[in-house]
Image 1: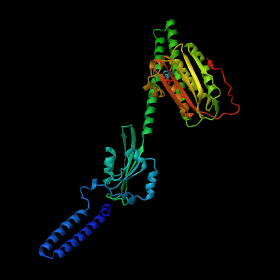
Image 2: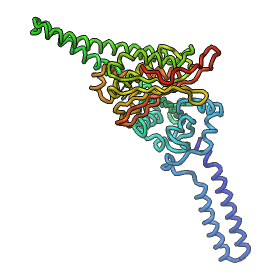
Image 3: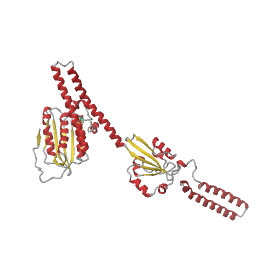
Image 4: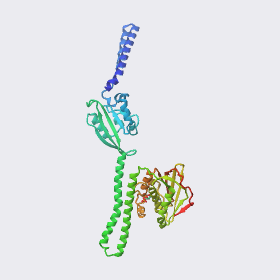
Length: 434
Ligand code: ADP
C-alpha cells in the first residue's frame, strides 16, 4: 500500500512526458515534411519516451529497505490523536513501518535518539543489537519481546525496550512495530546503592565485632588470670562497642531522616540559637582537644525547621571541625543573611583541609578522606550524609570550601522564615567563646 501511494504521481508524470514527447516528434515531422524528418522525429520520440518511463519508475525491489518512507506516512497511518497521546508520554515511543523505517518518534525519544530520526531505518537510529534483533523478530511475525540494554557513554544509562507489532489484520506483512523505551537508570542506581550500603554497613560493624569477640576468646583463654591484661582488653572492648553503638545510631538516624525527607518541616526556629546550643553541647569535646569555638554575633535568624534535626546538622559539622581541625586551634562560626530570602551559618576550622577533587564525595555514605583518622576520632563516615539529607528536607544546601594546609569551611544555607513580632533581634555579644 505504501508503494502504490508512492508510485502513482510518478507514473502520471511519466505518461504526460511520453505524450509530450510524441506530440513534439509529430510537430518536428510536420515541420520538415520529409522521410528523414520523420525518422528523426521517431528517434527523438523513442528517446523521450524511454526517459519518461525511467523517470516514472518505482523503486527497485532490492533498494526498498534503504529508501526512506514517504514523508506523510505517519500522518496517514497514525491519527492525530494517537500522535498527540504519544507526544504526551514521558517515555520514548518509536513507531516503525513494515520496512523497519521510523515513521514516528515522540519528543521524549529525542534526548536519546536525537532529532530528525523519522524516515531513517531503525538500525541507523538505535545501534543496539538486542533491540534490532527483537525488531527483526517482530517484523518476521514473531511475538512481542522485552529486552534490556545499557549505554555506557557519555553517562551510564539503563533501558528496557518493549518491541511489539500493532497489526491491523494480524497478517505478518501488515501493521506497524511499536518500540516503547523505559528508563531504568534511577532504579538500577538505587539497587546498586542499596547493595553497596548493606555491604558497607556490615563491613563497618564486622570490624569492631571481630575485635570484641577476639578479646572475649582471649579473656576466656590465656588472659583468664591476668588482671592487668583483662583491664586493658575490657577497655578496648568498651571503645569498640561504643563505635558499634554510634554506627547503629547514625544508621537509624539516616533511615528515619530519609523516610521523612519528603515531609517539609513545620515549626519556626532560630538558627542563631540552634548554632549556639550545638556549640555549647560540644564544648567539653572541644576543650579536650584544646580547641576554642567562636560563634559570631548575630540576632535572630528565623527558619522553618525541625529543631532536633538542625541541632544534629550543626553538631556534626562542629564536631568534624574539632576532629579534623588543628589541635589547640579555633573553630569560627559565622551567621547571617544572604539576600532577603536566605540565611546561612558557616563553620570554619584550621585543619589540614580537603583535596579539591574529593570534596564532592564527602556527603556519600561511609566516604572518608582518611579512614584511619576518622576511626581514631570515633567517626562513622555517616555524619555528612546525615547533614545532606536533613538539609534536603529543609530545602537547604551545604557548600564546602577548603584550602589544603589552611582549613575548611562548611556553610549551610537555609530559606529564611518570615519574622514574627515576638522574635527578638537584640544583638548578642560580638563573639561568644565556648
Ligand atoms: P566521619 O564520621 O568520618 O567524620 P563524616 O561523614 O562526618 O564522617 O565526614 C566524612 C569525611 O569527610 C571525614 O571522614 C573526613 O575525611 C572528611 N571531613 C569532614 N569534615 C572535615 C573537616 N572539617 N576537615 C577535613 N575533613 C573533613
